[in-house]
Image 1 (spheres, rainbow, N blue to C red):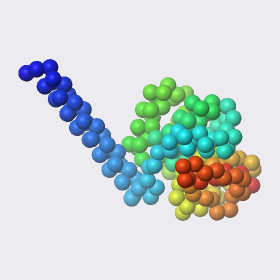
Image 2: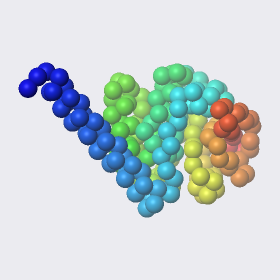
Image 3: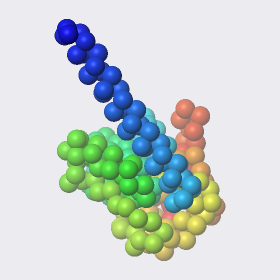
Image 4: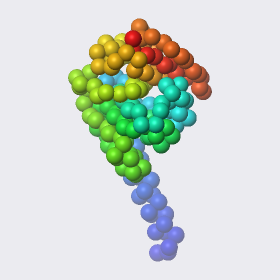
Length: 186
């Protein structure tokens, strides 16, 4: 058997492994959406993440919390593009969180970014300068009292697409048809 035969075999195996990994992520995402949080994983592209942090005027050294962080893409943007000091993300889905931890290690940013499992509604939320969310309205309604409880007046909250009901809206920005909202804790 020739060289090209083995190349084709290797490529087929790699494709099958990639499809298996993709399928596992999709099943994990469906499980998470149905049974855990009812919020599916939708990655935030770097372009949108940059615009969110520009809107929040994220400064070097500040701390960012991402509630429902998925694979940590937004936190990677905060550290790489804005030199955030420390970032903490909460993600229920262990498969997506594992993928995020892999990406963070690959970027050599494990000293700056931490992904935590568990339900952030049951956690004592850490201090932050900026809190980021991309959660459905019914989740944000439940989250708003926690934000007011854990964060001092003036803490910036950025939300992709969905609004908070009573937080003080400071600014909005539209990028690629999506509205981004900047709030301040009263």
